[in-house]
Length: 210
Image (cartoon, rainbow, N blue to C red; front, side):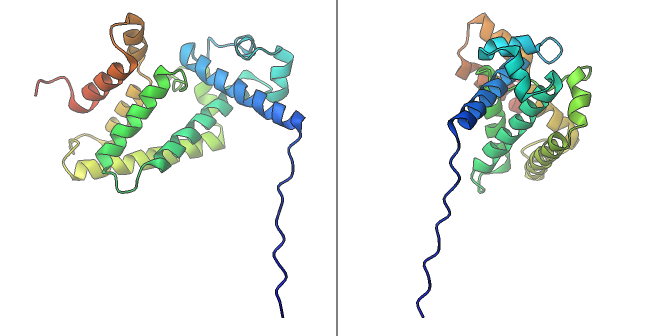
């Protein structure tokens, strides 16, 4: 007996209205990410986001019911982008090189206004994020991955094994949202690429002359 050919599954066609909705939401999230980097959560307003996107605030609220909901979605999306980048690194890349690559990518994103700053200890956004299951899960997965690379690099003697794991993790996180980058960029003395190299050098090599 001849087998019947498998039926091809045709994905449902997305309406033009739905495409516009998705495009507008993507623009909203991108603007929120940029503003979170420039102003941080407590100073950013929904008016700022609406003006940046070029839509009425009423249209903005059709996508996100509050500033907290919008910024949480932006931060969850940011964690997803980081995870996507980590997955793109070749598996055979040494652990220390992966940490270098991750920090380099994060700094480039920050200088390009594509990376929101992590909320500070007293930020109103922090409690909101910690109550969000998707954000907590994404942060936990990211921390476990970075922690494994740090542990491997310490076992190889490439990172001081006497440093507690959490100290190294927080140092990398701090560099990824370091206000020194913006100050160096505003000074105009260095290009973005030079700033990235200088921060990487001070982070991994320290300040002691070699």
